[in-house]
Image 1 (cartoon, rainbow, N blue to C red):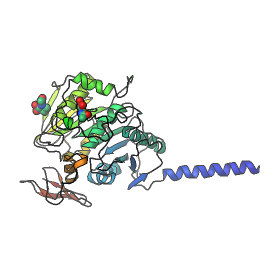
Image 2 (image 1 turned 135 degrees about the vertical axis):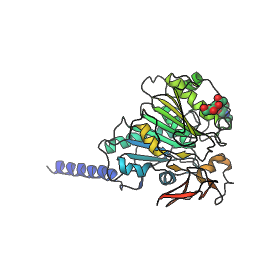
Image 3 (image 1 turned 45 degrees about the vertical axis):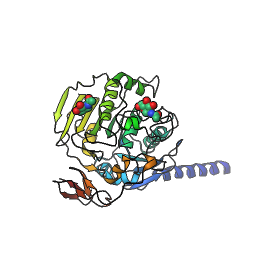
Image 4 (image 1 turned 90 degrees about the horizontal axis):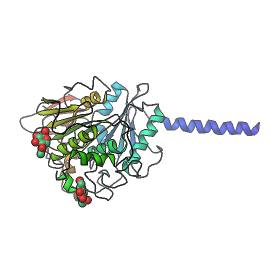
Length: 371
Ligand SMILES: *[C@@H]1O[C@H](CO)[C@@H](O)[C@H](O)[C@H]1NC(C)=O
Ligand SMILES: *[C@@H]1O[C@H](CO)[C@@H](O)[C@H](O)[C@H]1NC(C)=O
């Protein structure tokens, strides 16, 4: 009797710990430290809206070099839109100085290999369990180094993600150096050129034997990107065309001025779309609304969207123009945001001046845009 009430006391204590873990403060960015195995020391932050959908979707949103979970949370609209649509956002944060992602070591480029990709996948598994999220609605997106990691997540955990949206990245495996958190300048310079079959094999080799479904891929890149050269757009398209059995260079549809003026949308089929921005630099806008459609959280992901760009990451993405070892030169202050780019808003620390002839126009308290 005594023993059993002691035991049930312990159980109750256990249960209260479990629910304490569930109770992150809603509608704000919160760190989660107990998400399970974290072989590469990645930090986990989460945004859970006040009004959570039943069986919510999950978006993993991955920052650029020099970025943080908090900067990506503030600099993109994914959390704000979660308030409307009831999904959860996971913001992983790089453990390395310079905060690039490890997209270069065999560990991170392998399913359950113990690298950054493994830690991020464990955050997803934890979140599905903790919030009763819909395992068939898990998505991943990222900018620059985060876009490289997005391709790596899609390649190493194809069973986990339903769709991905990539902003100025490189193909999965292109940044290989054999070292943790390396910088591959052959790849960044757009000089790693392979056939679509070779690139597809790189993906297949990251999870040998896997024969299931793979995430749909939406790739964005700017033609004036001098950090991760635009050839990386072509190579990434080749990679996923190879995976899905499309023919690179033969999109089914080419649509001008989508998702925004000056961009071209290349529709290969339901699993692969490329958005190429003429004159867009590495300071690329994030089309969060468009991503929600691509993910199928809103609208109909089969039809190309006309959503206006919503967010850009200015100064901080520019800092990625130097390799982690040499990040010292980027000076703050005098910088310009491109057309559609963000130029102001609460918490905004990026450029506040717009490239001519655009002017900075307030959309709301959190967001002003170069229009
Ligand atoms: C960079 O990546 C390419 C593949 O994209 C590879 O052939 C090359 O060896 C890598 N460079 C280094 C320094 O590891
Ligand atoms: C890469 O893709 C862009 C957009 O479709 C195209 O304009 C460019 O010619 C391609 N580059 C090569 C080398 O094929």
